[in-house]
Image (cartoon, rainbow, N blue to C red; front, top):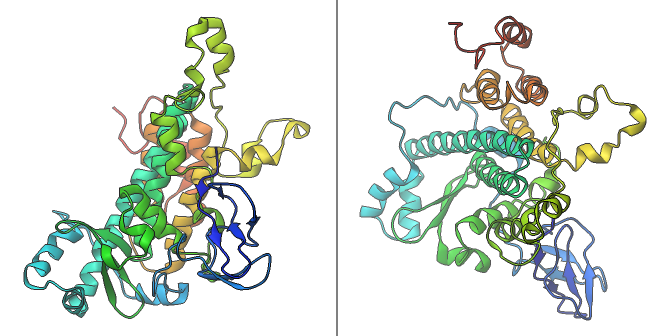
Length: 396
């Protein structure tokens, strides 16, 4: 199931039970009706049946001051210069020291809203964002290689984790993160003028008892659909389409027939029936970053653009490309996210076995970041030394 099941939102005026795509209503019955926008809906939206204002915040979280508009976010990064730390710490390391002396959220916020503390937070949260990004792209490579070897379900589970780390990378870039300083957790975020500290008791109701994964999915939904962000596919980024916790749980853990590892469910019928049911279709080496390159060398009559746009690899790359686009649009100078580093990691995992998709990732990254990486020199080096595991290592 590429969609998630979701509670409906009740219209207090006409009794309509409203849901929004791409989710499906958790329960059917009377008065169930589709909403007129894409999930997640605004905090207040017209009922599609009677037009009355409907409060959606009991199902879809809304957080005061989050996210910042893009212009405010960009200004918040002006003059920011992330630096390499020899012994990288975590946000919690310093937050624990603050909590030893200050206990109330108001006191904690006061301590956090000095110029030095805000600079510390921006450095720390961007470092964390980059860390999550590299986890996400590494897991994308793992997903592609698992699918190439016909590990269908495990590939899907790996794809889920790639998206899960993307959520964290993207939200950290918006200067929001969960922190776990002592018992429980809190949300720490910048609203454009000051750092805000909300412990779990002050978060929206659905977030208070959420598990460690659901916390991040709810925070992503609180982003809504900011119209001024200069990146593509925002509706897909903030929805639960394709990869979501319920899908991951069913595929990874369920023992219900045709849920957990469904490709293996005919083991009791013998080898032939197992393989007929499995229908192993190893992933081919196609460029998931560009529509034309995806079908390169194929008969145009056999090419359906829908195959590209629904390819899970394309979906995962879309998230990562949006992240890199946002970093580029923010305009500050940084050396953590570079074409050369991304190329080295992708080559290590994909260069020998999936050279086409590897080259596509490098090309697409270079196009987005427009840094000083020489694609021609890189490809020439690979051609001259095909025996090397990585073009970044000197020949033996």
